[in-house]
Length: 147
Image 1 (tube, rainbow, N blue to C red):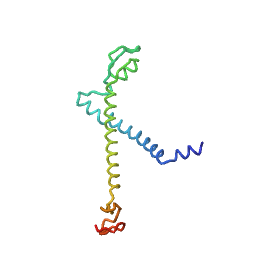
Image 2 (cartoon, helix red, strand yellow):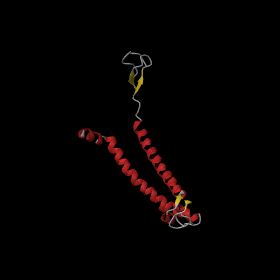
Image 3 (cartoon, rainbow, N blue to C red):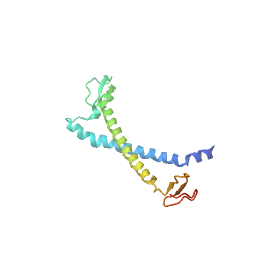
Image 4 (spheres, rainbow, N blue to C red):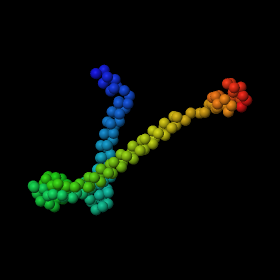
């Protein structure tokens, strides 16, 4: 059983997938920082100094302190039940950035694969016997017909 697991784990696809997951996790944290620390502060500033992560609706007041809560952290500390749509907006923006980046990567890889797959045509079919013959041939070596 250990040998089978080793054989499975060392296959190229499994190793490639593991590397992809690790890189994806690291990329996700970079995108989260980009959204939270770079994109959202200027957008919030343009909208009057609003922090999107503090957009929430109190569904039930907390037992430790009564509403209104100025920040989501205050509401959570008070034990309030909240609907955090600002964090959801941040998540949508993060997802969009990740999806676009992956789209660009896949598009570039597909272009590279397409370039690799283009091979020059070196043969043609004989119109009489349908055999593959050299492109420069003037007579078919199989049926001896002139081309």
